[in-house]
Every structure is written in C-alpha cells, then in structure tokens.
Image 1 (cartoon, rainbow, N blue to C red):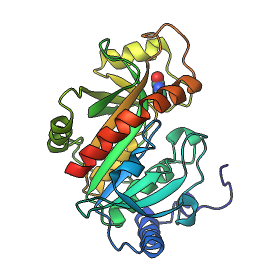
Image 2 (spheres, rainbow, N blue to C red):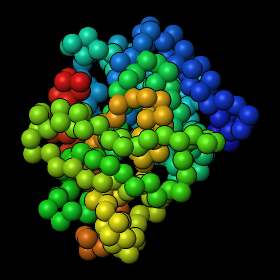
Image 3 (tube, rainbow, N blue to C red):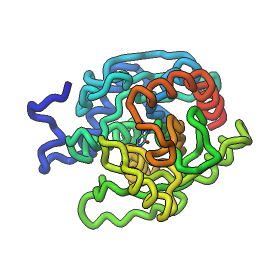
Image 4 (cartoon, rainbow, N blue to C red):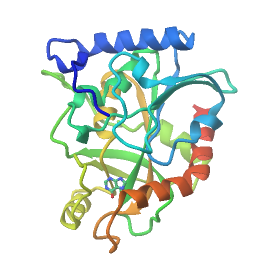
Length: 277
Ligand code: HPA
C-alpha cells in the first residue's frame, strides 16, 4: 500500500529534520527509550538479526511513527523495534525501508535514517540484498560495502550542502566486522534506481566504473547518515550474480529464496558485529 494522501515530507516547505525530530519523539514515547545508540536497517535476508542482537523491548508498526510510509513490498517488514544488547546499548531496528523506486522522493527514502539520528544514534548499519559482480562471489554470501557509486542522479542533500564522503563506509567499523569474520570480502556498491533489474550492459558499465555490487538502496541513505554525522557500516547479501554474469534470468523470488536460505548465518554474523560496536 502506498498512501497518496498528504504526507508531511511531500510539501517542499516542510523541514525534513523537523519531521524526523517529531518521529524521534514518537519513538521515544512508544518505546520508553529516550536515546538509541545504534540504528540498523534490515534489507532482504537480514530480517532475523533483530532476534539475535538482544532483548526486544518494543516492536511496533512503522506507520505509528510520523513520516513513515507503509512498505511497498512483501518480504520487507514494516516494523520498528527497540532492542537492548547484552552490553546495554539500545538498537533501533528499522524493518521498514522506503525505496527510491517507489517514486515518493528522496526525503521519504532517508526519513528513517534522519529519524534514527534524531533518536540519538551515532552509528548507522545499513544492510541490503544485492547482485554480485565479482566472479569469486556466490549467492548467499555476505560482503562489506567499502564505498558506493550513486547512479540515481539524486541526492538527499538540498541546496548548497557540500558534504565530504571520504571514508563514508567507516574503515574502523569494517575492521571490527572483519575481526568477527575474517573471511568477509568487500566491494563498491552501485545504487541503480530500479525497480527493473539491470541489463547486462549496465552491469558491465558498473564493473568498468569500479562497482562490485548492484542494488536499489543504501547509497542515498548513507549520504543522509553522513550528513547527520553518523558513522556507517554497510553489508550486502549477494542474493544473485548480477545480470549477464549469471546467465539465467533474475527473479524477485530468487532474491527472496537466497535471502531466506542465508538468513540464519548472516543474521548471526550481523548480531555478533553489532555486539562489538
Ligand atoms: N540488482 C539490483 N538489485 C538487486 C539485485 C540485482 O541483481 N539482487 C537483489 N537486489
């Protein structure tokens, strides 16, 4: 379902940071948690991680929070959770991603990230399911995002907002992740607009310009997280080899199935990494 009625972020006169502050106040009221330390967005395949991070102290539909849209996609859970880790950190788990391809504009895409920042989170963990370009990768394999190429032609930044994106996907946090799993490889994530999968020619282009992972999320969110001063960790689950690298047609079902199969392993990896943050 997508709500076509008036949405606070659709009016260009609205301050998106004001909406995020209201959303953060909603979350504090609903959860009873004044400040969250870490935010985690769960993409395809990563959903079980929330159960393993710690004790869920609140779980509620994202639509109860100002500015959140209902999820467009089956397999994406429109739930927010507050989870307390064994070390006492409060994690805001965002199971409600608004994708750029939904066409509601980039403000709605990054609203969850801005809300997380307004809730106090200094660390943003972004996860997704994506296509792999590196020949040595296999479907079902998690990889770290080392950098991105934003191919959407859009930005969450408005006006002359010049933001440095050096070390956007924190070297420090990637090192922590590799201490948990030294076999983790990493690559450059290319965000395409979607929702169609890429053509083989687009995948060849992505490879030529230095990309290793193709997907439809994350880059715009990472930019907004950096703007908010957060430190970012990104993970992709390679659900399939990208178009033309795998010779069989891509399907959403294949992506869902790969996510489901990998879920126990990657969720436990993610929970262990979060435990170290
Ligand atoms: N391309 C874009 N997005 C994706 C893919 C892909 O191959 N697999 C899962 N999400």
